[in-house]
Image (cartoon, rainbow, N blue to C red; front, side, top):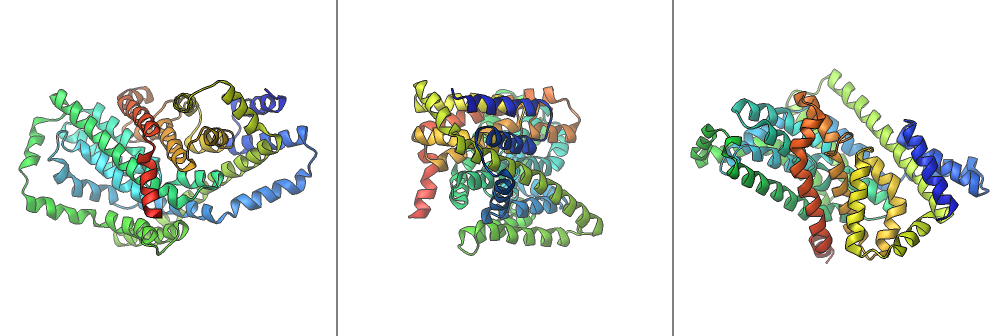
Length: 434
């Protein structure tokens, strides 16, 4: 393997082990590589990289969706979702456990963030489920698993990052995430129904009365879903109605979230201050990571590192399916140490050329990347969803990871199915493209 590849990995993992911020680690690794192996005017080149990547029009949607998430965090949306979904979830085996999955699916179509989805839905749902006597194990596990849908069902922050760095249409990525997202949610629901049927003690017997609710009560409860449906209409309706681009749809979503927050009486000076500070901190962190990834990606391209790694992988004579299995294993291990954003920006410049050479569609691979990031969200010790639930319940990470494990297995199996049947991902983009 070329010396440039060895030096790159040595610097990268050395800096990561030192505890340096991931964005600075990526930027420093790329800069050192160019300094050592190429004679370039870095004082002019690096500012140009910074300007080019941070002023990308497609990236504009990201801070807007982050701002929308901060606004929604201060609404009563979680209570509204629970009240609106509970009468309907009571019809299914597993009863109100499905509120976790239904609620996360709906909120995922608004927020674009897995952690925000888990936090907002879990804030009311977990308390209510435990108060009613549902098993703590399955209540926490189903929330952690379903919370990962925040990255798969559009709009998705991860898809925006992938689209910008991989030069892939963000609208096509959003479209490709719809069907897999709904199928994955259905798979989680199927597991809850099977699990609770086999283990009747997981659901209190008193909850069987939920089946006796009148249809009038069920339809009346739907009005509590109005704020969420209004926001979905603002974001996805404006985008797929041809009224707005993804960036413009994000702006429409911010306006809609602000209206909902103001209508619910949650928008005061202190709330606005917290919203703005939280948004700036998150946006700054992501911008630094994206900038570092751009510098490292361009440095790697100059040095021919992606081609060298691709040639090495090709020499292993892996079938396309085995390549994906190897990548799943690689990303699960990586997810034990890095968050999802860092995983994508650090590996995409190397991995994307390899999978393209193996014959995989970049749109399909974008959905694959989202799924492996979802696995990282529930993989200790750095799984963000696990931390969110720990903040809600106070339980240890080991316990939360244990009860979430079945949903990690479902994610892995679901990803393998999409590998065998990529049409599940690509069908809807092709249909909408005509």
